[in-house]
Figure 1 (cartoon, helix red, strand yellow):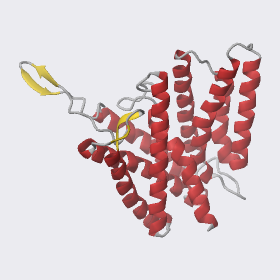
Figure 2 (cartoon, one colour; figure 1 turned 90 degrees about the horizontal axis):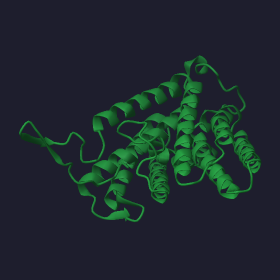
Figure 3 (cartoon, one colour; figure 1 turned 30 degrees about the vertical axis):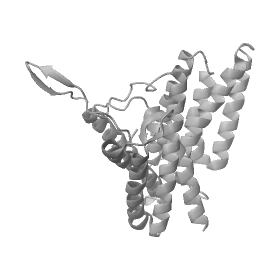
Figure 4 (cartoon, helix red, strand yellow; figure 1 turned 120 degrees about the horizontal axis):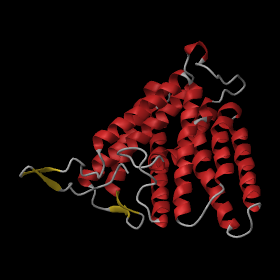
Length: 306
């Protein structure tokens, strides 16, 4: 992802002269990728700061597309997960996290897993174990983990709003989620910039050959800088909290990126889909966030308890 090191793009001949291929050395159409990225960012931040339920519905939509991509990838490899109960659970989990908190989220995962088990059991025994495992794994990987990005919005002891924030006051939970997203973007951006220019030592050559230790170092340095600024000026926390949060986010985001790369390598695919121009599939964008969200939630919870 962000810290990939690529060779310069090939040259193409146009009307007797050479020019560089419009696809840059990162292997992506950067103008399209930038436009799509900004559109998603504005939609997410707009909902987060002004209409929280819209943010939850956007997260739910991302989770639905992510599960659909995993479903199609598994189906192509011969494993068919029970899509109807899996999708029902995918829709339910972010909403359960928003309106009910952690307990409701866990209950939604448990109920969805039981539904997958019962649904698949009614279809016969052939391949059922593999199908059930795939369904539960997919729900735990995508909608359950990404729902942790919704949990800070749950109003403990109060009423979770359906409309705009009461009184127009954005709660600290929304700023925490904004900081999480900012650090994930910083991880990708600084990792890409450093890895593309200086990356020479592969981090996990058998899983993601283009991910380098230099890029990982760039991710940490850039995210720590951003984390300190966000901690002091946005969250009202000491600088060291932002540094610790940034390191946790980079570690979790990198683990998420490598985990998705491992799944794709096992399935023999490059991207989960091509639904997002310049980005690949939805899961190619969510891979870092799904791992970073629960880590951020635990760090913020520990900070509040301390």
